[in-house]
Every structure is written in C-alpha cells, then in structure tokens.
Length: 225
Ligand SMILES: Nc1nc2c(ncn2[C@@H]2O[C@H](COP(=O)(O)OP(=O)(O)O)[C@@H](O)[C@H]2O)c(=O)[nH]1
Ligand SMILES: [Mg+2]
Ligand SMILES: [Zn+2]
Image 1 (spheres, rainbow, N blue to C red):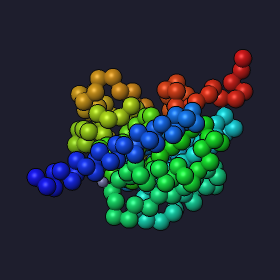
Image 2: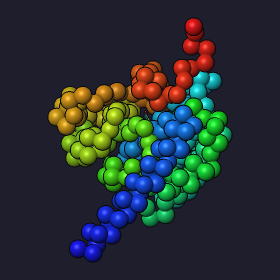
Image 3: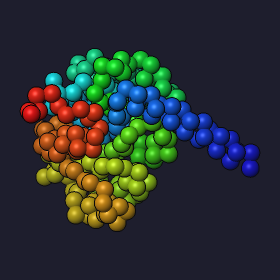
C-alpha cells in the first residue's frame, strides 16, 4: 500500500514538472519531440541526419539522455552548438526534472525545434511525460519485426512510428508486412515511416512530418512566398 502511494506521488510530481516544461516551451514557441527507441536503434544517427538535412532551415536544440558518458552530445555538437547531455546514472528513462535542468542549459530563444533523445529503452520512457509536444517511437530492422507487438505501449503512445536501418533489409530477416500489421493492430491511424538514417533514404518524409505536425514553429526560411 505504502509503495503504491510513493509511486503515485512520484508520477504526480513528474507530471507537474512536465506541465511546467510544456508551458515554458510554449512561451518560446518551441515544440519538443521526445524520441524513444531501443539502445542502438539509431536515435543519435537520426538526429545527426536530421540536423544536417534541416541545415539553415531550422535551429535545432537537442537534449540527449544516457546513463553514462557524453558521447552522444559530442557527436551531435559537431552539427549544432545547442546540445546538452543528461546523464541518468542508473536511471533507465528520462524524467521531467532532468529535462527542466537540460532546458536551463540551452538558449531556448535561439531554437526552432527541440529534440529529446530518451534513454535507449522501449518500456518505461513511455510512462514519463517530459513536456514534449510529440512522441516518436523508433524501431530498427536489426532489432526484429516483433518489437511493436512485444512493446505495445510505446506504439500506443507514439504520434509517429519510424522504422530505421532499411538499408539493411537485404541482410537481415525482417518481415515488414508483419511489423506493419502488428503496429496497425495496436493503432489503426499512427503514421509509419521507413528510413535509413545512414544512407538518407526516406528522410524527406520524416522532415515533412516534422514540418506538417507543427513541430517546426515557423515555415523554413527561404521556403518561398
Ligand atoms: N546500417 C545502418 N546503421 C545505422 C543506421 N542508423 C544507425 N546505425 C548504426 O547503428 C548503431 C547505433 O546507432 P546510434 O545512433 O548510436 O543509436 P542510439 O543508441 O539509438 O542512439 C551505430 O553503429 C550506427 O552507425 C541506419 O539507418 N543503417
Ligand atoms: Mg544515442
Ligand atoms: Zn526506466
């Protein structure tokens, strides 16, 4: 009984901080995308490719979460100066208070779009609101086609499902029909996009989704009259 009470309190406290994060981001006209996926599914690679693809069109900020090291932040800092690493220690997901501190480290006025790379984990990140506007579930072909069925909650929470590493399709056993069928069984409407963060195949549709879903606050500069 007592344990249940404590967990509920922790969740409520998180939701309050998440709401404050959301209000703060809204004040800056800034949308945040919470990128969730398993370890090695290609979250950082996708963010590298996304920042490169957006180029001058949008100033991208990134908070990146890992238990240890600043390696992802170092990778991303080559592409944008607006990067902060969050180390969670033994924590297997990001929580709203960690994102709040991360926001303190960024120059929010300068940003058009914020990505939050969650800790590599398909399970508990789903339960922790960070104050994001959109949640993206990233799967990859090397992880097997059964992951949506085995991890239904991340699919149910997602505004977009991405399947990465399609360049490896000839080399790994992966039934795309079955993957899609399992996603559809859980959610009839969630958009599903396939891409390769490494080769760039499928990146346009992802960038278009970012723009269309109002996650990019303003139309890209130079988009024409
Ligand atoms: N072949 C291939 N490899 C990829 C792709 N995306 C990421 N990788 C590789 O997968 C590994 C893990 O990528 P990383 O971005 O660090 O994954 P994260 O742990 O989810 O951030 C790295 O060796 C990447 O080069 C892809 O689209 N195709
Ligand atoms: Mg990473
Ligand atoms: Zn966790």
